[in-house]
Image 1 (tube, rainbow, N blue to C red):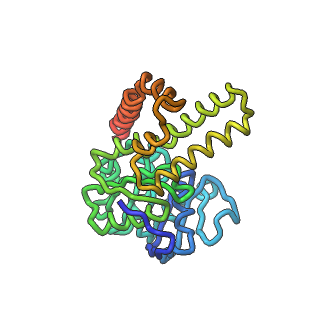
Image 2: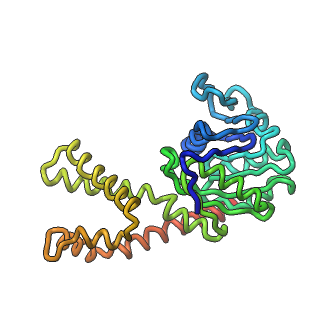
Length: 283
């Protein structure tokens, strides 16, 4: 796993992002950092034209040009498929004839295997599957990447370099990527849900909405930063906060009776089962 520092310079070849929505937009933001150079430029496709929104980027609007996706990928060394899973197969078939030999196609669609994409593309094109998460929008993402059957070590390194512009990257076999999606992919939603519930608890104890948000979000932010900067395991940091016979110990006892370990195991298992369902449906 690697994280490029802010000072590191990154050079990438021509990139086309098909579907510059939330995740495609996050990657675009990473690519437009001053330390990143994209030789040949960046092309994107969007549903409708939005002049001036992406200065320095060649944008094609699908509502104005039905060949926008095909035009965007011509001569691109990297093509990022940023559409929803249900649209991946049709998009791959649409651009197949316009991809240059050696192009790296990267999919960020949950549940869609590299094999399903490879079947719809020429044999000369490599595929890598990636699972980034939403903190990529603030440069703190975690992305898992898996190589398809035609992807070389060089292709995988190219994908790794791309996603290092928005955070940390973990290389893994494709049979583990659905499991990764249940942790880092869905993980931000779990954290936001916990924040929701703790803010509700704060309001129940008389705090206003603004006060509850300050207390809870500030506590989460501080705890995560303490964990990241201290190098101390979360179990030990929890122990340091939990004084014997104190208030925190009493609260932790309630959480332990709720068997949160089993709850999280069940929740992540349910997420993985759904990812596997998607893979079968979209094969």
